[in-house]
Length: 130
Image (cartoon, rainbow, N blue to C red):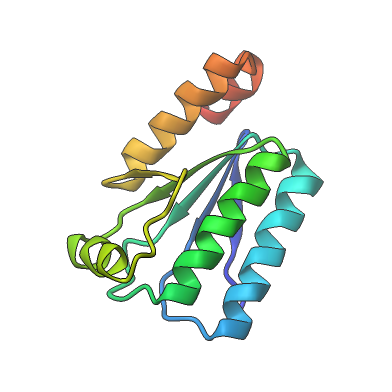
């Protein structure tokens, strides 16, 4: 299953709606990084609102994807983590280290726009709000 990556101005949005196999998670990571490089995206919102469970492999891959995206010049926010998912990740010792999270997608997009503007990419941030 291919997870779409949508472009909203300077921000890329991807929403994981179903549980993924390990192979699909790795393909997701490759696809996201490829789109960031191709579009020179300045922000990435990963929406996981629909996920009831995030296993340790998925958590590690999201964490690694965020780190790689930052190396490519994109700010990253993970949106919509359920409280039960957060609790489970902490209990497994798999917190998302260095990855910003927000309650919902609206907050995530607003945070990305602020971060892009603070970096000095004002023209790109403005294009994301149209």
